Image (tube, rainbow, N blue to C red; front, top):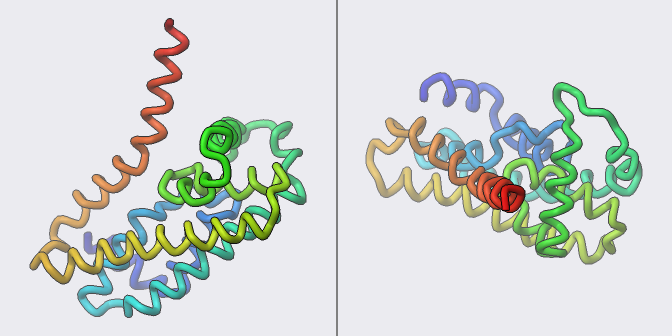
Length: 198
């Protein structure tokens, strides 16, 4: 807990906003822990380390701008990504998984993907590749950015305010958030593996 807290405090607001921007739409940001980061800084805000209102406004803007940047990448170079070879960091399967998610949920993907690791990074790129109208995209982008960032920030903040000493269990809570975040992907993988066996 102490090491995590010290790292976040050292990077401050700029570090938090940069991480949210990168995970929301920067191609290599999929490995960043957006959900747990938002929850953690919300919890730290309850102890006075951060101002919750600065976090809410800054993270919303970072998330919206990040997704818009991802959309721009999709419009500019998106199609070429499907022919790109896998590397240590980039895996084409991430794009294909997001494309399947998009085909299943349509425009709502821009909102729903906010709550699914990896998918949230590639969803705006797929929207750009698919030439989704920007007016439509930005509407869902704003809704998703507000609900995701505010939800996790306030969850951490309110928990810190109502449960004394909750920060002592931060490692367990963050582990739980990460597990819950990856459950939709795990469930889809499980369903596909069963379908292949049938």
